[in-house]
Length: 578
Image 1 (cartoon, helix red, strand yellow):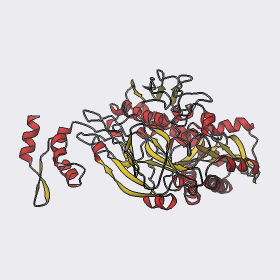
Image 2 (cartoon, rainbow, N blue to C red):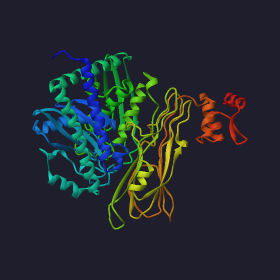
Image 3 (cartoon, one colour):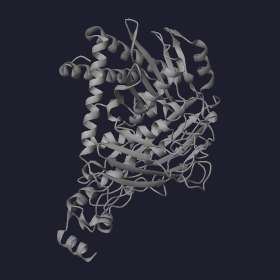
Image 4 (cartoon, rainbow, N blue to C red):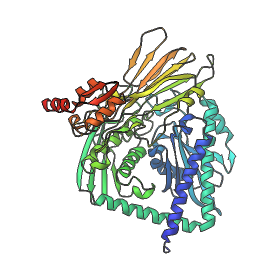
């Protein structure tokens, strides 16, 4: 191997990162579904010719970590038989790692007839057929019920569309215009990355590109090992129990994690986790490994551009045919709950090791999906709104509010987009402070959102989990965050409150109001140690009432001349008496 020019290597690495950012911008500008161009429920990844990650831009952080495994499966499937202009498609959950709605599209990159790399995008489709519109069905019992399954078919071969496959998609999804538009956006994104890599090869040569990225991956591995070696050796374990699998209410549904730090390596064991669930809460192995790797990188090296070097010092022990390592055709459509559990379990394990880098527990995924498949009431649509909530407090500040936990720093869907793309009016969107954990630093708040239905024939689904054994656990005597709910308010009829996930209830008519409240984050430290000035600020901002301040924090605030102020003497007396 030639001596590496470290300056040129850094230029190449950053050019590849910039290429993924351009790919992401192409996705946002050309996608049809707001879940992609607003919420950014996708990721883009550039990989070597053998599937090692070179660069990525999330989106959803776990997509990129699992993508290399899917590409390696494609290389094996085709025995390396790729040509310029090929585009491949795969959404088999046991190769992509998530659920069947997340579709991976990737393209081989050639320069002077030599395979140099792969560019790929993973994106949640608006629909992929199956039992429920848009995915996240709570009660499937096998993969066949969840939709169309692709295993590395060439959707484009040597630059020519496989029209039969495109027609198959058109005939099997509820909103073909949106789905095919998003597929075109994924292909355009891959082509953008392909052009950038080819321009790099033209300037520096393919051998230089490979050597530079081999060096980057090696140096990243060294950095990761050095960071781990500085931590104390030891074993740290925890577990979380899910409410149900969507099919059976009774059962264990346990996710277990033991983290062993020894020298410059980390070993993850998930032994003790429940067997494969009958319902769709199972998480395929690629994403079980991926979310643990992503969480560890986020804790130890959060600002590093991600590449294959961050995972070389990690070992995984996954029990076979379990909730964290199912086999085909186990259902996986609600896979995301286990991802949230594993991320919060990682924080619990590392809170006592690096407490300045880990939050208390955050809210579990919560959101509402609305759809209409029948055209007699109007145009079919699928609307997915994964809503933000409250994340856990940190050692020195309150938890983040209005953040999508576990999936990267994803935006929410703007009200203007919801109202112009779908037959709904958003009549209220505000903080829900009552679900936040109480402590020295409080958990992040949930949000409350009211959707007024403007048409007939609408069905609803509700996404929620961990209402009993919460992910939003407080730390150091901070209280847990509370979970969310869905309230359905028909024009004529009783209000119905749902505190567990549901699928395809309805139909509901014009005028029905749906209120979704998301969960709050866990708090850090004793409530009696919260700075009274912070409590006063929360009262002034209407996050707390004066009675809340007294009851939860032992702080006395009074309204004088239309303004809130502290009574420090009464506060000292109240806290001393408690």
